[in-house]
Image (cartoon, rainbow over all chains, first blue to last red; front, side, top):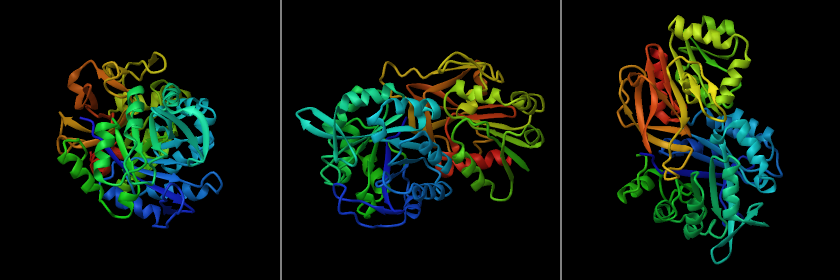
Length: 252
Length: 208
């Protein structure tokens, strides 16, 4: 049976790992290659790098990190942040990324998802959707780390990216990100119910029950978290054992 | 020993190169190439494949003489070849991804979309799944049954002759996830992304 994945996410800025509260107040906490290796040895099912300031900075830094990590970690590696062109994707894949996550570029023009999935295959195209609740049962897509409102309905957009060949959706609740109050389970549920591709839950994990909620209540195929693993509150193995004890199937 | 990873522009093969390099570590001479002469003279071939069945076949066919060289190597001379993901699927007679496309025809069978029971199972089949090993003495030597392997695919190879199946995995039905026919090996999952167990499978292939 297919296992639910636990994905530690490393936010990278200037070649260093950071994790902020609601994307501000960044703290420096380590070398990304070393961190990735620790996670991979600790049983992470996948590693995610998010280059949080890639839009404005030199892309070589993240490519170099990906190259070094890919030589040491033999689990899937997803890289996102500032991916805007086919060339950006080519560069990351050649450096050793297995999947690339597209955010703003997909919102600007969903046909970019189509172009990318046709060229590289759906298996390596993840669309990252940042959503914020705007009213009861209504979520809107935001870009630029939650700064820009787009007016696009998150559920409709999720369906659209699926039609355009996305292999997975990485769904982040901008209301919950950095708050440690748990995933937005309602948002997850509505997106997992309206699409047929795997959804990775993101944004808001503060304890292991939140991971459980994302999978069992939200219907996510994978759960992504940063700070709970990053600051050593929990080990990946602990998270897996906990989920297993609650009858959620994971790779032990 | 000389091992060739066939680089026919089928998408991202960096992970395959990285993992084989890690396992080979100086004991095996690894080449990444589409050079026909180098392929002819090597001892073992790895045939990766990403993207669609059609795009992989199109790329393979676009390199003059490559398909015939691979056929001589694997079918006539019966030297070991490992297909990974679409690399395995291409062994089939025919595939139905994007458009009906002729495969290499090395192992009778077809490649069709996984029946996801009307949306009950999400596609692609992405993540770690357990494998049921049927033939455990070659690439699965010392691999525990029910080991987890990393999958990412929406199509499955359905061989006519079930005796070529060396492992299956459960996802909506029993999906063929590894093939072994004489010197021909194939995995639907990605050993190069399957952590230590995956590297062990690669090592087993290199040691055959």
